[in-house]
Length: 289
Image (tube, rainbow, N blue to C red; front, side, top):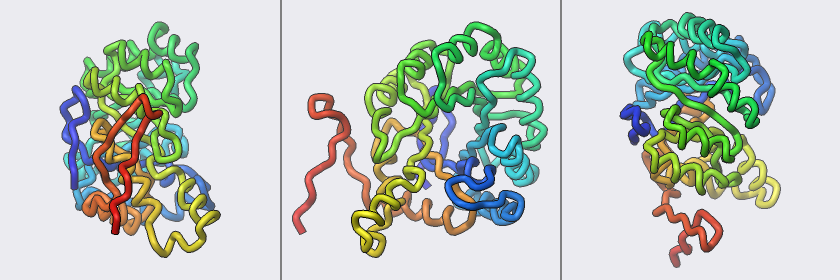
């Protein structure tokens, strides 16, 4: 397994993390029953930990805590093998944040959470202002003082000025943002600015939420017999040295092993280059066969 430093947290985390959305939400991207697959997910989590994946990311909103409770079954016996990141809704007040943290601790069967994040989705400027000025951030800071959480993060699908403001504020140790082969906006300036300010960068949707395999199956139906689109997508994200963790949704042992294989092989990695004059992320020319 490959490990990277999560910004100023100094946590040494696996470059791929176990994403909790697909395993905690019914019918996420495809028909799926969480309860019927509970044992499979627990086995997948153990497989991930056995193979060095040590970053698990989840949220209260993944099944109204169901995802956290499944992870908590594993943490009962393996808490020291993992760093746990979860999220609370961004619309809570001070007291609501305190209760949400305590409830997550209970579901996760732990006395501390490594990274507690405000769950952004598509965060508005008004929501960000309320988080910072009206009590929610202060509540997490209080939880940190009490040892309930270690670090504070914020997530947002959109790589916009809100995340830039969070990075520059010095109040957030980790950001999580969407970044993948299709959606490259975070490459500039969000990820470089985070690295400059020693803020850990966690990437959501690195595998394009099935977008790349569906696209390839439409334009090149035989492509699946030649290349692995998930491998291409993951290597694209991990080629960026300022990305710390790529969160991959996993539900079963085979998905875990496939992602680990991608990390080990590095088949589609390249020397990352960001060229603003040429419009962002640059791909190296193909090597003649």
